[in-house]
Amino acid sequence: MNASTIMLFLVIVAGNIFAFGLFVSPVQTFRRIVRNRSTEQFSGLPYIYALLNCLICMWYGTPFISSDNLLVLTVNSVGAVFQLVYIVLFIIYGEKPTKVRMLGLLLAVLVLFAIIVAGSLQIVDFQMRWMVVGLLSCASLISMFASPLFIINLVIQTKSVEYMPFYLSLSTFLMSTSFFLYGLLNSDAFIFVPNGIGTILGIVQLVLYFYYDKSSREDSEEPLIVSYE
Image (cartoon, rainbow, N blue to C red; front, side):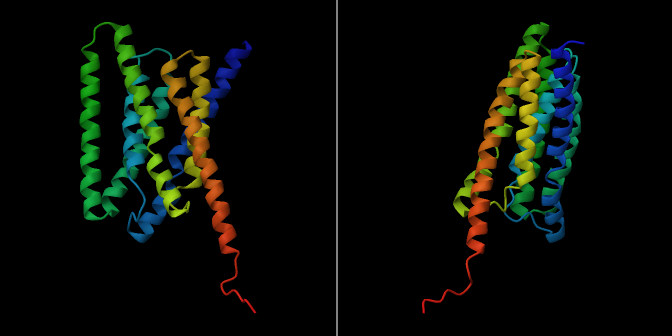
């Protein structure tokens, strides 16, 4: 077993671990949503993007599209189940406009995925099918990693990290870094390019988190009553 094979194995193990960490990282957020029976100002868009991404990448990892991408298939299959559960909770506990919007987006994602599957199977040439679905998976990954930009904007406006869970940002960074390395070792640009972008966006989220979390802690250390005597 050469060094590159060992490295690939370690990256696959790390990718599985960090991906699972990413999938379970919103659990605390959804405990709060269930406890308060409200989605508050939490955005459901990241979970919609994540579901679409998981479904497309899962399809990309199947033998119908690419070979030797079992990691991509298994990880995204599990991820799709988690995202579906989170979206259902948003539909249950959101206000009426949120319920309608999330349900509509969920149906749109499922219809779009069905169209992608049916359409790609019509492409007889395997190499062309791989390229088409690969480009779609690349685009969906980039959109998923870019979706927290809505939350980043909220963080900057409110100067608070309350609605940007730390472990979600950390898990996104770790998982995208692992898959970036996996894509490089597998020489698969459809994997390493979007995950490279995800790594950069993950760093941005972590920097913002520590900056505004530090600012909020410094503000909270100020006395409630200031005497000027």
